[in-house]
Length: 156
Image (cartoon, rainbow, N blue to C red; front, side, top):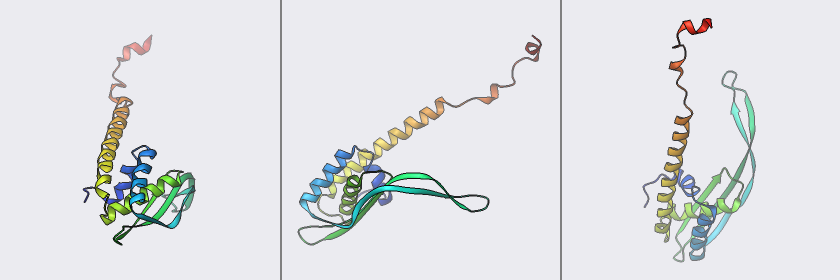
């Protein structure tokens, strides 16, 4: 149904304003039955890393985290499960992404309306990446110019 990997769907969907994603999920929830398999949750998670030398774990800090897991059932009885885990503090957005994930994964009716969201999300992500590359290029320093001055100027 879609050319994008499932692992990328949440990132591509979250490139849109939250209201747009929630509206798309709401339209599908009106069309199908949505059951929360776990209650949508939002809070803080601890970012844990490991020291490269001694392999000791340490906590870098807190990050916002929202999760949702849903089952979508069509009127014909077809079911599909979807989930989302976002670095965000909005549980409603996580639930909306989980609904869209379930519809896309199961190829349920309405999935064709979600594919353009993925395509526009990819375009937005690519534009953001190009902007970041341009900003990085603008801050690049050319160290090869150092040390090319005449030594005679140092005697002044």
